[in-house]
Length: 286
Image 1 (cartoon, helix red, strand yellow):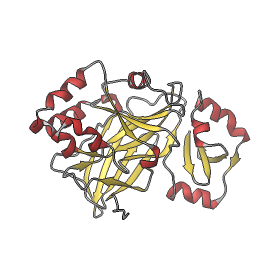
Image 2 (image 1 turned 180 degrees about the vertical axis):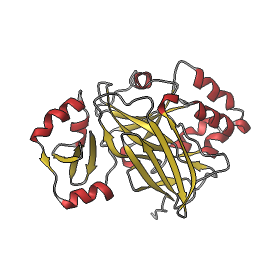
Image 3 (image 1 turned 60 degrees about the vertical axis):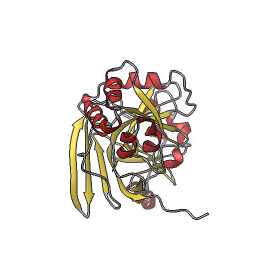
């Protein structure tokens, strides 16, 4: 099942049929046994035939987040460890990433408040004070207030590799800025946990030409979802649940940096494709 968040309401898509749900987003998703709840609700839901709503499913999606925070896990894939070590050689911090990859405790960090999150077909930003900006495709978990994994979505953890590589303590500046996170296109709520052979793919287009493509599977992740969620919820409460990015598994080559108008497409089996256009944050005059 897939839940799409629109300005007109919430659409449940199941077996190619669209249903309208008249609930607040936080109220709907932050419940135990979300799949079972949705399955039981379908007979009472209204089938959507409104063309405006159907058009919005393709063109005007909101990110699948209400009042939740977004957190992220780092160095959960071997490729991510290698990339972090490569970018940090000059600062002498390369060993940090090798150690955290092997450590019992995972790296977890705050990523975004919901108002900074971009949705499908919306813009993501790159920093003007960075010389090396990249997208990071990630499987995102939705964990409810009780700590139960209830759904999945696609995440784009926009990052400044030049700032993080300069000094590991600059991680917040490298990771947290306006529209540095994208989620979408939907919240995927399967009956069974997502399989480990699930593929993650990313392409980047510049001037209508593909300049990067790669793919892998989530089976390459070193840590389990339960492990990451367990550490996150140890000393934090999330009354409306939380989204957790599980780490990047695809990294463009070191000579690549994003440019304005680049188009980043991230696909995950079962969930769909998240598409974002890259730009700088507009200057605001006070």
